Length: 190
Image 1 (cartoon, rainbow, N blue to C red):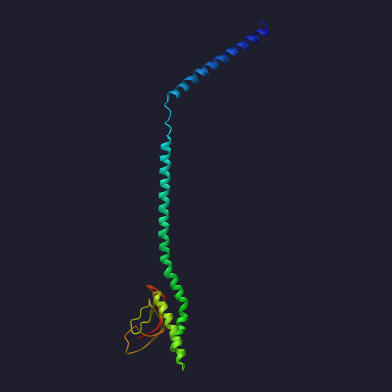
Image 2: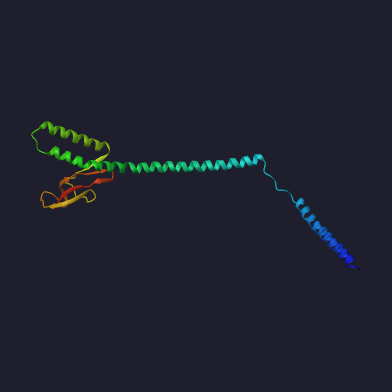
């Protein structure tokens, strides 16, 4: 055999092997394709089912948002209820030196009765404003000393008063409900 014939024979053999490989591959693919076709296809959701699922999702989001807003509203009300007394106490505390000075001016000796009456009117207006806000004076002369309400600055001996009794008030104290704005400055006896 000549070399050309050998080449042709080799080419024929390689072409036959390639065809056999193709046939083997196609026969293996066919059962896979057949198996895929035999399996039932997954059921596609209908338009109605999609809308129901979307509606349920939106309803869930709405309910969560509603609950979140309700919690926010309750928290805001609680914060306002806590802030109002504190703000009132701070404001009153800023006016206490003014009240002390008007009280001293009202108790001072003067020959001008009209001036004294005017000072008393201003002091009474300030006291009424404090009462409207719920502010109470702490002035407990003759009562037992309470360190939660009063600061003792001195001590005296007095046979007429009992032990740990408030003998004199140097500066009135004020409170708003249970909150002490300023404790009273007092002298205690015995």
